Image 1: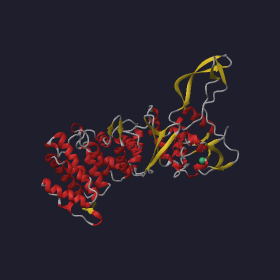
Image 2: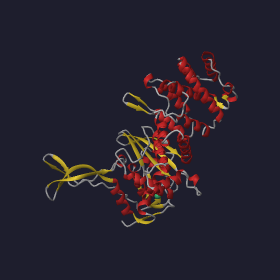
Image 3: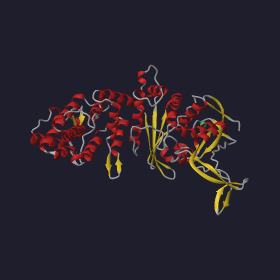
Image 4: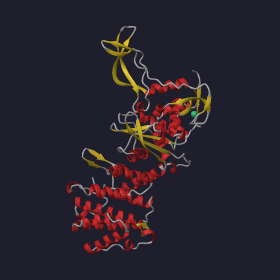
Length: 499
Ligand SMILES: [Zn+2]
Protein backbone atom coordinates (compact mmCIF):
# COMPACT_ATOMS: atom_id res chain seq x y z
CA UNK A 1 0.00 0.00 0.00
CA UNK A 2 1.70 3.15 -1.18
CA UNK A 3 -1.11 5.57 -0.56
CA UNK A 4 -0.16 8.76 1.22
CA UNK A 5 -1.75 11.30 3.47
CA UNK A 6 -0.70 14.89 3.88
CA UNK A 7 -0.01 16.35 7.31
CA UNK A 8 -0.06 20.11 7.76
CA UNK A 9 -0.81 22.52 10.56
CA UNK A 10 -3.88 23.68 8.64
CA UNK A 11 -5.90 20.49 8.87
CA UNK A 12 -7.46 21.12 12.26
CA UNK A 13 -10.75 19.23 12.61
CA UNK A 14 -12.14 20.79 15.80
CA UNK A 15 -12.44 17.37 17.41
CA UNK A 16 -10.14 17.32 20.43
CA UNK A 17 -9.22 13.67 20.11
CA UNK A 18 -8.44 13.72 16.40
CA UNK A 19 -6.55 17.01 16.65
CA UNK A 20 -4.45 15.64 19.52
CA UNK A 21 -3.62 12.68 17.28
CA UNK A 22 -2.75 15.00 14.38
CA UNK A 23 -0.39 16.89 16.69
CA UNK A 24 1.26 13.61 17.71
CA UNK A 25 1.73 12.69 14.04
CA UNK A 26 3.09 16.14 13.21
CA UNK A 27 5.63 15.79 16.04
CA UNK A 28 6.82 12.46 14.73
CA UNK A 29 6.60 12.91 10.97
CA UNK A 30 6.49 16.67 10.37
CA UNK A 31 4.53 18.46 7.67
CA UNK A 32 4.33 16.88 4.24
CA UNK A 33 3.17 13.73 2.48
CA UNK A 34 3.68 10.45 4.25
CA UNK A 35 3.02 6.84 3.42
CA UNK A 36 -0.09 5.57 5.25
CA UNK A 37 1.47 2.18 5.87
CA UNK A 38 4.59 3.55 7.56
CA UNK A 39 2.47 5.74 9.88
CA UNK A 40 0.19 2.81 10.66
CA UNK A 41 3.04 0.46 11.50
CA UNK A 42 4.76 3.13 13.63
CA UNK A 43 1.53 3.61 15.59
CA UNK A 44 1.10 -0.11 16.15
CA UNK A 45 4.74 -0.43 17.27
CA UNK A 46 4.17 2.35 19.84
CA UNK A 47 0.87 0.93 21.01
CA UNK A 48 1.94 -2.71 21.35
CA UNK A 49 4.43 -3.22 24.15
CA UNK A 50 5.93 -6.16 26.08
CA UNK A 51 3.92 -6.96 29.20
CA UNK A 52 6.90 -8.32 31.10
CA UNK A 53 5.42 -11.83 31.11
CA UNK A 54 6.58 -14.88 29.21
CA UNK A 55 4.44 -17.37 27.31
CA UNK A 56 4.94 -20.50 25.21
CA UNK A 57 3.96 -21.27 21.65
CA UNK A 58 4.31 -24.48 19.71
CA UNK A 59 6.87 -24.12 16.92
CA UNK A 60 5.55 -26.34 14.12
CA UNK A 61 8.85 -26.58 12.23
CA UNK A 62 10.98 -27.37 15.27
CA UNK A 63 8.20 -29.52 16.73
CA UNK A 64 8.66 -28.12 20.22
CA UNK A 65 7.48 -25.45 22.64
CA UNK A 66 9.27 -22.11 22.44
CA UNK A 67 9.27 -19.33 24.98
CA UNK A 68 8.25 -15.84 23.85
CA UNK A 69 7.83 -12.41 25.42
CA UNK A 70 4.15 -11.57 25.78
CA UNK A 71 2.92 -8.31 24.29
CA UNK A 72 -0.34 -6.43 24.45
CA UNK A 73 -1.89 -3.07 23.69
CA UNK A 74 -0.30 -0.65 26.08
CA UNK A 75 -2.29 0.33 29.19
CA UNK A 76 -4.71 2.16 29.26
CA UNK A 77 -5.22 2.06 25.47
CA UNK A 78 -5.90 -1.67 25.94
CA UNK A 79 -9.10 -0.71 27.76
CA UNK A 80 -10.35 0.73 24.48
CA UNK A 81 -8.62 -1.32 21.80
CA UNK A 82 -10.12 -4.76 22.18
CA UNK A 83 -8.44 -6.48 19.24
CA UNK A 84 -6.84 -9.78 20.24
CA UNK A 85 -3.49 -10.84 18.85
CA UNK A 86 -3.56 -13.37 16.01
CA UNK A 87 -1.94 -16.54 17.31
CA UNK A 88 -2.39 -18.98 14.46
CA UNK A 89 -3.98 -22.41 14.83
CA UNK A 90 -3.94 -24.09 18.22
CA UNK A 91 -1.95 -27.24 18.94
CA UNK A 92 -2.42 -29.60 21.87
CA UNK A 93 0.78 -30.60 23.68
CA UNK A 94 0.50 -32.85 26.74
CA UNK A 95 -3.20 -32.08 27.01
CA UNK A 96 -2.70 -28.31 26.96
CA UNK A 97 -3.47 -25.98 24.07
CA UNK A 98 -0.78 -23.69 22.69
CA UNK A 99 -0.78 -21.11 19.90
CA UNK A 100 1.46 -21.94 16.95
CA UNK A 101 3.02 -18.46 16.84
CA UNK A 102 3.49 -15.58 19.29
CA UNK A 103 0.28 -13.52 19.02
CA UNK A 104 0.58 -10.66 16.54
CA UNK A 105 -1.29 -7.51 17.52
CA UNK A 106 -2.32 -5.37 14.62
CA UNK A 107 -4.97 -2.94 13.41
CA UNK A 108 -5.92 -2.70 9.79
CA UNK A 109 -7.55 0.30 8.25
CA UNK A 110 -9.37 -1.43 5.36
CA UNK A 111 -10.12 1.61 3.25
CA UNK A 112 -13.20 1.53 0.99
CA UNK A 113 -12.88 1.57 -2.79
CA UNK A 114 -15.67 4.10 -3.10
CA UNK A 115 -14.99 7.63 -1.95
CA UNK A 116 -17.20 9.41 0.53
CA UNK A 117 -17.20 12.29 2.98
CA UNK A 118 -15.15 11.87 6.17
CA UNK A 119 -17.29 12.36 9.27
CA UNK A 120 -14.59 14.30 11.08
CA UNK A 121 -12.81 16.52 8.57
CA UNK A 122 -15.37 16.61 5.76
CA UNK A 123 -12.88 15.69 3.04
CA UNK A 124 -13.95 13.46 0.16
CA UNK A 125 -11.73 10.45 0.31
CA UNK A 126 -11.58 6.66 0.61
CA UNK A 127 -13.09 5.86 4.01
CA UNK A 128 -12.76 3.31 6.77
CA UNK A 129 -15.46 2.26 9.20
CA UNK A 130 -14.17 3.32 12.58
CA UNK A 131 -14.96 0.61 15.07
CA UNK A 132 -16.09 1.46 18.56
CA UNK A 133 -12.87 0.21 20.06
CA UNK A 134 -10.62 2.59 18.26
CA UNK A 135 -11.69 5.89 19.73
CA UNK A 136 -12.47 6.63 23.38
CA UNK A 137 -14.78 9.47 22.49
CA UNK A 138 -17.25 7.10 20.89
CA UNK A 139 -17.22 4.49 23.67
CA UNK A 140 -20.49 5.85 24.98
CA UNK A 141 -21.79 7.84 22.05
CA UNK A 142 -24.70 9.36 23.96
CA UNK A 143 -22.27 10.86 26.47
CA UNK A 144 -20.34 12.53 23.70
CA UNK A 145 -23.32 13.68 21.73
CA UNK A 146 -22.27 17.30 22.02
CA UNK A 147 -18.99 16.63 20.33
CA UNK A 148 -20.11 13.96 18.05
CA UNK A 149 -23.66 13.84 16.84
CA UNK A 150 -23.05 11.30 14.10
CA UNK A 151 -21.36 8.81 16.40
CA UNK A 152 -24.49 6.71 16.85
CA UNK A 153 -24.40 5.23 13.38
CA UNK A 154 -20.66 4.59 13.59
CA UNK A 155 -18.03 6.78 12.05
CA UNK A 156 -16.64 6.79 8.56
CA UNK A 157 -13.21 8.32 8.53
CA UNK A 158 -10.60 9.20 5.95
CA UNK A 159 -7.17 7.63 6.42
CA UNK A 160 -5.68 10.75 8.02
CA UNK A 161 -8.44 11.05 10.64
CA UNK A 162 -8.37 7.30 11.34
CA UNK A 163 -4.59 7.36 11.88
CA UNK A 164 -4.92 10.48 14.00
CA UNK A 165 -7.61 8.70 16.02
CA UNK A 166 -5.11 5.99 16.87
CA UNK A 167 -2.35 8.51 17.52
CA UNK A 168 -4.64 10.15 20.09
CA UNK A 169 -3.65 7.38 22.54
CA UNK A 170 -0.09 8.64 22.40
CA UNK A 171 -1.07 12.24 23.07
CA UNK A 172 -3.35 12.05 26.08
CA UNK A 173 -2.44 12.60 29.68
CA UNK A 174 -4.02 10.05 31.96
CA UNK A 175 -4.16 9.13 35.61
CA UNK A 176 -5.73 6.15 37.32
CA UNK A 177 -7.18 6.11 40.80
CA UNK A 178 -6.33 2.61 41.89
CA UNK A 179 -7.84 0.20 39.43
CA UNK A 180 -11.26 1.83 39.44
CA UNK A 181 -11.18 5.24 37.89
CA UNK A 182 -9.45 6.54 34.82
CA UNK A 183 -9.09 10.25 34.16
CA UNK A 184 -7.81 11.48 30.88
CA UNK A 185 -6.95 14.97 29.79
CA UNK A 186 -6.65 16.44 26.35
CA UNK A 187 -5.75 19.96 25.39
CA UNK A 188 -7.17 21.70 22.42
CA UNK A 189 -6.05 24.82 20.61
CA UNK A 190 -4.90 25.81 17.19
CA UNK A 191 -3.04 22.84 15.73
CA UNK A 192 0.35 24.56 15.70
CA UNK A 193 0.28 25.30 19.44
CA UNK A 194 -1.13 21.86 20.08
CA UNK A 195 1.83 20.34 18.26
CA UNK A 196 4.21 22.49 20.29
CA UNK A 197 2.46 21.38 23.48
CA UNK A 198 2.79 17.74 22.46
CA UNK A 199 6.45 18.10 21.62
CA UNK A 200 7.55 20.14 24.60
CA UNK A 201 5.23 18.99 27.37
CA UNK A 202 3.14 15.86 26.74
CA UNK A 203 5.72 13.66 24.98
CA UNK A 204 8.42 14.28 27.65
CA UNK A 205 5.83 13.44 30.33
CA UNK A 206 4.98 10.31 28.36
CA UNK A 207 8.57 9.19 28.68
CA UNK A 208 8.25 9.35 32.47
CA UNK A 209 4.98 7.46 32.67
CA UNK A 210 4.42 5.11 35.57
CA UNK A 211 1.74 2.51 36.24
CA UNK A 212 -0.53 5.18 37.64
CA UNK A 213 -0.32 7.41 34.62
CA UNK A 214 1.65 10.06 32.78
CA UNK A 215 -0.32 13.05 34.06
CA UNK A 216 1.57 14.92 36.76
CA UNK A 217 -0.84 16.10 39.44
CA UNK A 218 -0.44 18.14 42.62
CA UNK A 219 -3.16 15.87 44.11
CA UNK A 220 -5.93 13.75 42.74
CA UNK A 221 -8.89 11.63 43.69
CA UNK A 222 -11.71 9.76 42.03
CA UNK A 223 -13.57 12.88 40.93
CA UNK A 224 -13.08 14.84 37.78
CA UNK A 225 -12.70 18.42 38.98
CA UNK A 226 -10.27 17.70 41.81
CA UNK A 227 -8.04 15.73 39.45
CA UNK A 228 -8.23 18.49 36.85
CA UNK A 229 -7.29 21.18 39.36
CA UNK A 230 -4.46 18.92 40.56
CA UNK A 231 -3.11 18.72 37.01
CA UNK A 232 -3.45 22.44 36.38
CA UNK A 233 -1.67 23.38 39.61
CA UNK A 234 1.23 21.16 38.59
CA UNK A 235 1.39 22.74 35.14
CA UNK A 236 1.02 26.29 36.47
CA UNK A 237 3.94 25.76 38.84
CA UNK A 238 6.03 24.70 35.90
CA UNK A 239 5.67 28.04 34.14
CA UNK A 240 7.93 29.97 36.50
CA UNK A 241 8.87 28.16 39.63
CA UNK A 242 9.85 24.62 38.93
CA UNK A 243 12.06 22.76 36.52
CA UNK A 244 10.52 19.40 35.81
CA UNK A 245 10.11 20.36 32.17
CA UNK A 246 12.66 21.64 29.66
CA UNK A 247 13.07 25.35 28.92
CA UNK A 248 11.05 24.78 25.75
CA UNK A 249 8.29 23.14 27.78
CA UNK A 250 8.16 26.04 30.21
CA UNK A 251 8.10 28.54 27.36
CA UNK A 252 5.27 26.65 25.68
CA UNK A 253 3.18 26.70 28.85
CA UNK A 254 4.04 30.35 29.41
CA UNK A 255 2.77 31.14 25.91
CA UNK A 256 -0.43 29.21 26.45
CA UNK A 257 -1.30 30.17 30.03
CA UNK A 258 0.31 33.54 30.46
CA UNK A 259 -0.20 35.03 27.03
CA UNK A 260 -1.23 38.40 28.39
CA UNK A 261 2.41 39.06 29.11
CA UNK A 262 3.34 38.57 25.48
CA UNK A 263 2.87 40.86 22.52
CA UNK A 264 1.15 38.31 20.30
CA UNK A 265 -1.96 36.54 21.45
CA UNK A 266 -1.64 32.82 21.55
CA UNK A 267 -4.69 30.82 20.60
CA UNK A 268 -6.98 30.15 23.55
CA UNK A 269 -6.38 26.77 25.05
CA UNK A 270 -9.15 24.43 26.18
CA UNK A 271 -8.70 21.45 28.45
CA UNK A 272 -11.01 18.47 28.12
CA UNK A 273 -11.07 16.21 31.13
CA UNK A 274 -12.86 12.88 31.00
CA UNK A 275 -13.47 10.44 33.83
CA UNK A 276 -14.47 6.85 33.37
CA UNK A 277 -15.08 3.77 35.44
CA UNK A 278 -12.78 0.92 34.56
CA UNK A 279 -14.56 -2.35 33.96
CA UNK A 280 -14.57 -4.68 30.99
CA UNK A 281 -14.63 -1.50 28.98
CA UNK A 282 -14.34 2.04 30.25
CA UNK A 283 -17.67 3.57 31.16
CA UNK A 284 -17.43 7.30 30.70
CA UNK A 285 -18.91 9.14 33.70
CA UNK A 286 -18.28 12.74 32.88
CA UNK A 287 -16.60 15.14 30.55
CA UNK A 288 -15.75 18.74 31.30
CA UNK A 289 -14.44 21.49 29.16
CA UNK A 290 -12.23 24.03 30.92
CA UNK A 291 -11.68 27.03 28.72
CA UNK A 292 -10.67 29.88 31.03
CA UNK A 293 -7.16 28.58 31.53
CA UNK A 294 -5.50 31.98 31.18
CA UNK A 295 -7.79 33.51 33.79
CA UNK A 296 -7.14 30.57 36.09
CA UNK A 297 -3.43 31.03 35.65
CA UNK A 298 -3.77 34.74 36.47
CA UNK A 299 -5.59 33.83 39.71
CA UNK A 300 -2.87 31.33 40.58
CA UNK A 301 -0.15 33.85 39.84
CA UNK A 302 -1.83 36.39 42.12
CA UNK A 303 -2.15 33.81 44.94
CA UNK A 304 1.57 33.14 44.65
CA UNK A 305 2.23 36.85 45.18
CA UNK A 306 -0.20 37.04 48.10
CA UNK A 307 1.22 33.99 49.88
CA UNK A 308 4.85 34.90 49.23
CA UNK A 309 4.71 37.20 52.30
CA UNK A 310 4.07 34.42 54.76
CA UNK A 311 5.28 31.23 53.18
CA UNK A 312 8.67 30.06 51.92
CA UNK A 313 6.98 27.99 49.23
CA UNK A 314 3.77 29.67 48.08
CA UNK A 315 3.05 27.03 45.44
CA UNK A 316 3.14 24.21 47.98
CA UNK A 317 0.93 26.32 50.21
CA UNK A 318 -1.68 26.71 47.46
CA UNK A 319 -1.58 22.94 46.94
CA UNK A 320 -2.04 22.39 50.69
CA UNK A 321 -5.00 24.76 50.73
CA UNK A 322 -6.85 22.86 48.01
CA UNK A 323 -5.74 19.42 49.08
CA UNK A 324 -7.08 19.86 52.62
CA UNK A 325 -10.76 19.41 51.70
CA UNK A 326 -10.71 15.67 52.32
CA UNK A 327 -11.62 13.42 55.23
CA UNK A 328 -10.64 9.93 56.23
CA UNK A 329 -13.81 7.86 56.67
CA UNK A 330 -12.93 4.36 57.76
CA UNK A 331 -10.55 3.04 55.15
CA UNK A 332 -11.66 5.53 52.60
CA UNK A 333 -10.38 9.00 51.88
CA UNK A 334 -13.49 11.01 51.02
CA UNK A 335 -12.69 13.92 48.72
CA UNK A 336 -16.12 15.11 47.67
CA UNK A 337 -15.56 18.57 49.28
CA UNK A 338 -12.31 18.99 47.40
CA UNK A 339 -14.07 18.17 44.16
CA UNK A 340 -16.80 20.73 44.86
CA UNK A 341 -14.33 23.46 45.76
CA UNK A 342 -12.23 22.61 42.70
CA UNK A 343 -15.29 22.70 40.50
CA UNK A 344 -16.25 26.16 41.72
CA UNK A 345 -12.73 27.46 41.08
CA UNK A 346 -12.51 25.91 37.60
CA UNK A 347 -15.91 27.34 36.69
CA UNK A 348 -15.44 30.70 38.43
CA UNK A 349 -18.48 30.11 40.61
CA UNK A 350 -18.97 30.19 44.39
CA UNK A 351 -16.87 27.78 46.52
CA UNK A 352 -18.10 29.28 49.81
CA UNK A 353 -20.96 26.83 50.58
CA UNK A 354 -18.63 23.84 50.06
CA UNK A 355 -15.98 25.34 52.34
CA UNK A 356 -18.65 25.97 54.99
CA UNK A 357 -19.89 22.40 54.71
CA UNK A 358 -16.36 21.03 55.04
CA UNK A 359 -15.62 23.19 58.07
CA UNK A 360 -18.86 22.30 59.93
CA UNK A 361 -19.44 18.73 58.79
CA UNK A 362 -15.84 17.53 58.84
CA UNK A 363 -13.40 19.69 60.78
CA UNK A 364 -15.67 20.80 63.62
CA UNK A 365 -16.98 17.26 64.16
CA UNK A 366 -13.61 15.68 64.70
CA UNK A 367 -12.50 14.81 68.22
CA UNK A 368 -11.37 18.01 69.98
CA UNK A 369 -7.77 16.77 70.03
CA UNK A 370 -7.80 16.28 66.26
CA UNK A 371 -9.71 19.39 65.28
CA UNK A 372 -7.86 21.81 63.07
CA UNK A 373 -8.57 25.16 61.50
CA UNK A 374 -8.24 25.63 57.75
CA UNK A 375 -4.69 25.61 56.40
CA UNK A 376 -2.65 28.77 56.36
CA UNK A 377 -3.45 30.69 53.19
CA UNK A 378 -7.03 29.46 52.84
CA UNK A 379 -8.57 32.74 53.98
CA UNK A 380 -6.11 34.79 51.92
CA UNK A 381 -6.98 32.87 48.75
CA UNK A 382 -10.68 32.97 49.58
CA UNK A 383 -10.62 36.73 50.24
CA UNK A 384 -8.89 37.41 46.95
CA UNK A 385 -11.32 35.16 45.11
CA UNK A 386 -14.33 36.89 46.70
CA UNK A 387 -13.16 40.26 45.47
CA UNK A 388 -11.72 39.23 42.12
CA UNK A 389 -14.24 36.66 40.92
CA UNK A 390 -17.40 37.15 43.00
CA UNK A 391 -17.10 40.97 42.93
CA UNK A 392 -17.47 41.39 46.64
CA UNK A 393 -16.61 44.90 47.87
CA UNK A 394 -13.37 44.80 49.83
CA UNK A 395 -14.74 46.68 52.83
CA UNK A 396 -17.65 44.23 53.19
CA UNK A 397 -15.25 41.30 53.05
CA UNK A 398 -13.03 42.90 55.67
CA UNK A 399 -15.96 43.71 57.93
CA UNK A 400 -17.16 40.11 57.75
CA UNK A 401 -13.69 38.69 58.36
CA UNK A 402 -13.05 40.99 61.32
CA UNK A 403 -16.41 40.41 62.97
CA UNK A 404 -16.31 36.67 62.21
CA UNK A 405 -12.93 36.25 63.89
CA UNK A 406 -13.95 38.14 67.03
CA UNK A 407 -17.13 36.08 67.11
CA UNK A 408 -15.22 32.79 66.89
CA UNK A 409 -12.89 33.78 69.71
CA UNK A 410 -15.79 34.94 71.90
CA UNK A 411 -17.80 31.77 71.21
CA UNK A 412 -14.79 29.74 72.28
CA UNK A 413 -14.37 31.74 75.46
CA UNK A 414 -18.04 31.47 76.43
CA UNK A 415 -18.43 27.88 75.21
CA UNK A 416 -21.34 28.84 72.95
CA UNK A 417 -20.61 26.58 69.96
CA UNK A 418 -24.38 26.21 69.49
CA UNK A 419 -24.48 29.81 68.27
CA UNK A 420 -22.15 28.98 65.39
CA UNK A 421 -24.33 26.07 64.32
CA UNK A 422 -27.44 28.25 64.59
CA UNK A 423 -25.68 30.79 62.39
CA UNK A 424 -24.63 28.16 59.90
CA UNK A 425 -28.14 26.68 59.79
CA UNK A 426 -29.98 29.97 59.15
CA UNK A 427 -32.30 29.35 56.24
CA UNK A 428 -33.53 32.87 55.57
CA UNK A 429 -32.71 36.48 56.50
CA UNK A 430 -35.18 36.39 59.43
CA UNK A 431 -33.41 33.44 61.03
CA UNK A 432 -30.05 35.02 60.30
CA UNK A 433 -31.03 38.24 62.08
CA UNK A 434 -32.44 36.27 64.99
CA UNK A 435 -29.02 34.63 65.43
CA UNK A 436 -27.24 37.99 65.16
CA UNK A 437 -29.60 39.26 67.84
CA UNK A 438 -28.73 36.29 70.06
CA UNK A 439 -25.05 37.05 69.51
CA UNK A 440 -25.51 40.65 70.64
CA UNK A 441 -27.57 39.58 73.63
CA UNK A 442 -25.66 36.50 74.83
CA UNK A 443 -22.11 37.47 73.96
CA UNK A 444 -22.49 41.19 74.42
CA UNK A 445 -21.01 41.82 70.98
CA UNK A 446 -21.93 44.65 68.67
CA UNK A 447 -22.82 43.56 65.16
CA UNK A 448 -21.19 45.89 62.62
CA UNK A 449 -23.67 48.38 61.26
CA UNK A 450 -23.34 47.45 57.52
CA UNK A 451 -24.50 43.89 58.29
CA UNK A 452 -27.75 45.18 59.74
CA UNK A 453 -28.94 46.84 56.56
CA UNK A 454 -30.81 44.50 54.26
CA UNK A 455 -31.77 45.90 50.88
CA UNK A 456 -33.73 44.80 47.84
CA UNK A 457 -33.40 41.21 46.68
CA UNK A 458 -32.43 40.16 50.22
CA UNK A 459 -28.97 41.63 49.78
CA UNK A 460 -26.91 42.79 52.73
CA UNK A 461 -24.41 45.54 51.87
CA UNK A 462 -25.11 44.60 48.24
CA UNK A 463 -24.09 40.98 48.76
CA UNK A 464 -26.64 38.12 48.69
CA UNK A 465 -27.63 37.57 52.35
CA UNK A 466 -26.76 33.86 52.21
CA UNK A 467 -23.18 34.58 51.17
CA UNK A 468 -22.88 37.04 54.07
CA UNK A 469 -24.18 34.37 56.44
CA UNK A 470 -21.95 31.66 55.00
CA UNK A 471 -18.79 33.75 55.11
CA UNK A 472 -19.48 34.87 58.64
CA UNK A 473 -19.91 31.27 59.74
CA UNK A 474 -16.65 30.29 58.00
CA UNK A 475 -14.55 33.09 59.52
CA UNK A 476 -16.08 32.46 62.94
CA UNK A 477 -15.64 28.69 62.98
CA UNK A 478 -12.13 28.96 61.61
CA UNK A 479 -11.19 31.43 64.36
CA UNK A 480 -12.82 29.14 66.92
CA UNK A 481 -10.76 26.16 65.76
CA UNK A 482 -7.59 28.25 65.60
CA UNK A 483 -8.15 29.41 69.11
CA UNK A 484 -8.87 25.90 70.31
CA UNK A 485 -5.66 24.49 68.83
CA UNK A 486 -3.30 27.31 69.55
CA UNK A 487 -4.68 29.37 72.34
CA UNK A 488 -5.58 32.98 72.66
CA UNK A 489 -2.58 34.91 71.42
CA UNK A 490 -2.70 33.52 67.91
CA UNK A 491 -6.44 33.21 67.38
CA UNK A 492 -6.59 36.34 65.29
CA UNK A 493 -3.38 35.61 63.50
CA UNK A 494 -3.86 34.46 59.95
CA UNK A 495 -0.23 34.64 59.00
CA UNK A 496 1.08 31.76 61.08
CA UNK A 497 1.70 28.42 59.45
CA UNK A 498 -1.07 26.01 60.32
CA UNK A 499 0.90 22.83 59.71
ZN1 LIG B 1 -10.94 12.98 7.80
